[in-house]
Amino acid sequence: MSNAITAAQLKQLDAAHHLHPFTNHQSLRNGGARVIERGEGPYIFDSEGNRILDGMAGLWTTSVGYGRKELAEAAYKQMLELPFYNTFFRTTHPRVIELSRKLSEIAPAGLNQVFFGSSGSESNDTAIRLLRHYWVLKGQPNRRIIISRKSAYHGSTIAAGSMGGMSHVHQHSYPVYEGFRHVMDPYWYGEAFDGETPEAFGIRAARAIEDEILRVGPENVAAFAAEPVQGAGGVKIAPSTYWPEVQRIVDKYGILFLADEVITGFGRLGTWFASEYYGIRPNMITFAKAATSGYIPLSGLIIDDMIAAALMEHNDDFNHGYTFAGHPVACAVALANLKIMEDEHLVTRVKETTGPALARMLAKFKDHPLVGEVRSIGLLGAIELVADKKTRRRFDNPGRVGLMCRDHFFREGFIMRAVYDTMVCSPPLMWQQAQFDEAEAVIAKALDLTLKDVAHEVTA
Image (cartoon, rainbow, N blue to C red; front, side, top):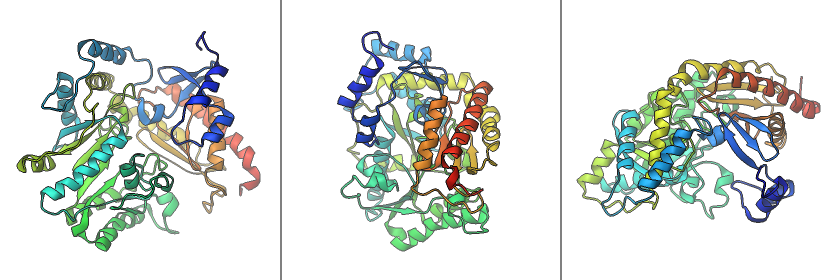
């Protein structure tokens, strides 16, 4: 904690001047914010001296852990050499060139062009513009509709927020932008019919996309946009039949396919991109977060050669961009971050070691009285909290019990995020077995404490 200012004073100043994202400001200011002062490896430390195991990698972000000197040194060196220059006016610089080449090397085949930004929301806004612009160039300007899913999160700008399906994001758009449609999530646990197998449900969920294409007319559809795993929607993992059927549908109707890999990109499923894991063939991939392990903002859009060719063939000015797109310091940090991931074999470890370790850990809680389902893929995991395991009956006032459980996790020194009454985690890729053991002990205690809080609501 700083010698110049106390923890209490920091909280008071935060309440006086800082408007937090996605926050009930009255509630936050009444209770005060937790002040995080530093990080080290897989841990963060607050202003009161508590060490907390970070099970969310910051915000699905800090893959290589906190305090990596290599990333600080890369930023420092680049700041001395060239702290900033834009990529407008036919200029470029070495780091953005090197990073563009590197991303084309690790991206799925055929995706060789990169357009940079600073956040996932920015990159999805870029994608929306480019998806629609492509069809204008191809002489089909009526292709404007983008189909997404009901619990999709694609960002919080007005356009990206409209493409996402979350009503609490939409409600502040006044109005939601037109041109987006939303279909059911591939969420077997929450939306399957009685007796419906995951495989049958996966086909039904995918065909909801086809139904919507036919409803609005294929000639009016620009693209289907989706996260390979819905992150902020509750780590919803599609059944094995879903993605092959989705690919068949987009191919059948000749619509573009945007994979939002802001969360799943850079190794989280045990491949560089989740599109490779699932064998899907997107025309665009949006990325952010783990590209730099969150050490500095950087995002982008990796674009296939077909879309890039349309820009070239029509001698087109794509009048879109950002001041900090391809920022040299951000690109230098991203290159250093990707080198760490390669040198320490973090992507391979997710596939062979840490991903299976997370699955084993979560499976130990599937019989807990409060737990309806546990699920994971790579280093993404979820625990569903329910009032009745047999009927999957939820608690009244969705999110109430999840917040209780989240608070127990925090107090016990481990971060899991509550998405309504689903507890989700996204550990740093550099976790070792010691962190899984530590997390397991806290999960057991937090679930028991939550059960004690709501025992009168739970059907045994």
